[in-house]
Length: 199
Picture (cartoon, rainbow, N blue to C red):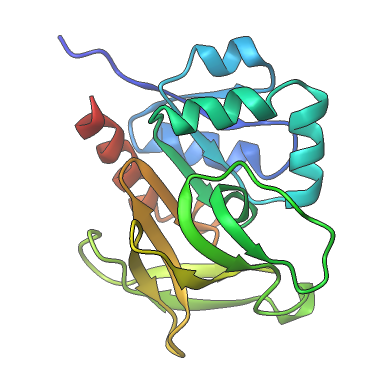
């Protein structure tokens, strides 16, 4: 009998509850992660939407930042949505914002708040490579976009105006948008399949 992987959701800040529910609905075992020992116990991790600067500060305060970097560098599967995409990016176009560091792992440059402020939030149907059926309804809330995709990463989705909003690099996945808020569990199911294939 194959063991069901345990997926952690970074739970110090961000929309943790929605990701836990989406992963559970996709048939995965999902648990919150707030401490290094909880990170040690999971097979994969979701970095949710939230405020990326605050998430980095809290990860450092709770002694999670270096363990997160090591686990991801060692090949742990991870999925980042919105702020989580920013945290997984190797490079950031800050646009003058104070965030100067990330967890890293994805060979991409992201632009923070690229689509505008909270009042500029919008939804759009986005086809995603590897996800069958109708396009995914993507919710963009103060979202980043991928400004540059390095040779190690692969773009999976674009908006109608051509901005890259989903990428994959080996066991790492990131989206600019929030699939956890729509009730469409296909992105989380895709991540669960990635973990299963990674063994």
